[in-house]
Amino acid sequence: MEWEKILADSVTDGKLKELHLKKIPILKTCNNWREVEPVGWVDHQMKFSYYKGGLVKLKGNIYFVPEKTINALSEYINWKFPLTISVYRD
Image (cartoon, rainbow, N blue to C red; front, side):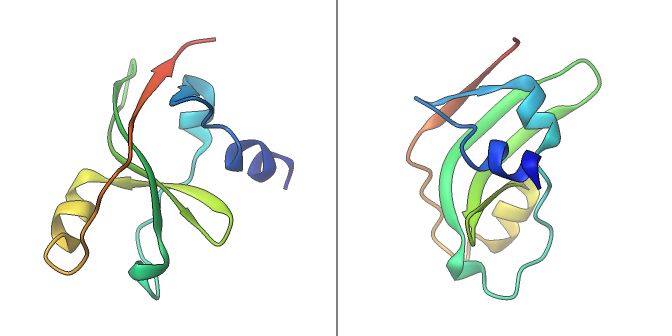
């Protein structure tokens, strides 16, 4: 529960810690994709993984949506990410 609160407020001034990005859950399915609010676009290479997709908020929680999911839903939903989020190491 404590991590959920930290992650919900983790994006500040268009920046996000790499540690927080690792902890953000991936949103694979949703009952209503129109309730999802885009926060920002992420394109970051880590040592063993590559994050390319969007950060979104759903019911107060933050999630990561992979690019392939966004592309699959793009004909139904107009995704407009307000900013590009830079990821930094702490």
